[in-house]
Image 1 (cartoon, rainbow, N blue to C red):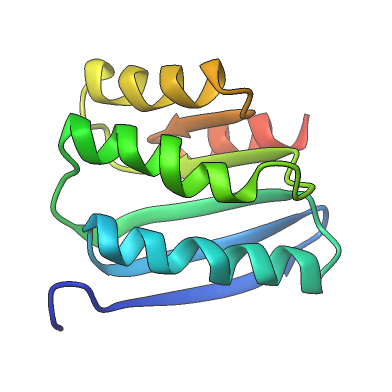
Image 2 (image 1 turned 90 degrees about the vertical axis):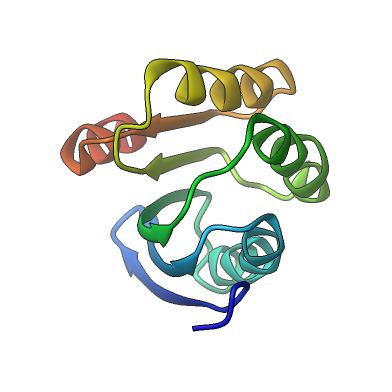
Length: 125
């Protein structure tokens, strides 16, 4: 699979949209995924999304995490997304804290969890 190629499996699950991403974790790939996920939310009249990225290979640098939040998420502001949760393998508290902190400071209701059941619970409460 080329560096920025990815696949998304998207399906509504009750009150939220479930997304499974596979491929390579690059900022270009994630930037391309965001509008597809947003369009699926609109098409299904949903405002909550669970995104499982455990099958994405590689890691984001702190700069990439910052840019995803400040540039890519910003394009969705006011679009009706109420809650977003990412399921990812545990990458260390610092990395998870870094991205969550920037997202929450900018007004996004966003979390990262390693456990899919905990992520689903947070999303549905």
